[in-house]
Image (cartoon, rainbow, N blue to C red; front, side):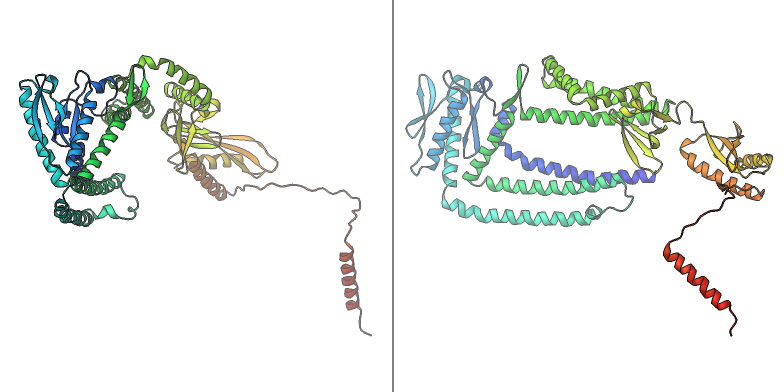
Length: 553
């Protein structure tokens, strides 16, 4: 219980900083989407950047120096975008002019009109007036708001404003840098394990993920702090504020402009990002469901490991398939429009991806027919190992050397596969043994049977048997038959039995012969030919021996 409690405590240590970092980043990014005017527009359900007929029926913002003042609606002759573009340009020219600004409220055709420096700025239509308010009251409210915005814009263009704000900007930058290094120093003291160059050998993968999240939390906090500082600095000057607002509006339009027609609708990049996020969330949710299914349901059903894996496989892909269909329907995609596309895609998959399709179909056959299951000890070609995972395209086989081999599923159906565990793991080993001619065969049989006694991996039932296989060229051949229940350990069992057999045969004086060959020569003379050099040496040696054997005179 202690390790689990320690892991949960570790998760709690980094979960708080991560949530704090995400909150700081969200607060820093909040001003980027505009001030109170933008918030009000979003509250009314306004979506910037729409094009076509939808945009012509939506209001448009009145903006001065990057600040949204209010929104106006389309008139009978002009769209809201056309009205706001003219008004925003006129406001910008008045704010940059050196002359004074005179904003008056007049009446034309029984409608309130705002006049800026003798030029008509805005006519307040009935659609611009909210329910429960008079047109003249709305016009007066807008006039006051415009006067305040123009006065502020002209004041921010004065040199005094720059001299007053420059020390503040430098102070904010210095504070942001100090907080950046302070946060990093605090994080190093608070989470020293997150800064290890290499994790300890055999470290827990969950601890490694915790270290990564701790670093990510620090990066998010620092990024949120710098973004907040830059947003505040850009908000102090008209040029930077206007540039920021124009960039955000361009990005917003780029995100929401439709570019992918499917059926009767067209989808934007933002729609695609939302769909991708929903699909990723679906994959994570299916993973959680499968984890609960394995740990809380399947393990208590008494099913074999292969059966549990088959149920989990079908559940995973079934949930992913139906969940994707539901998400696409909720996303607004008419799936009937994809019928032709799906048929063309199927033909392309069948022709261009024959190998992949073959492996996919083979995987489905293996899942349903179950000739191979997780945990089986199989032999395919020169590969022997235990099946660790059955996938839709391939199967993972772990060899006796603990090496994972990924085998395409088609090889299990196209070639001959030896499944030592299919049906029952009970299997028989054959150990050939040869002894010298003249050995007592009864003693040999008793020695071979005795070698199996005391071996825990050799089954007592069925009992071991010894067969006299035949007469070899240089040995009497016997075969020891033993039954085992763990085929993946057959090499260890064979080695242990061979050690035991050799020791028992040696105790009983029975030898294991090596191959022998008899060479028969005929009685005729054999002629040997030597090289000239060897002949001269032999003659010289013979003459020297003859001289040494003569007595001295």
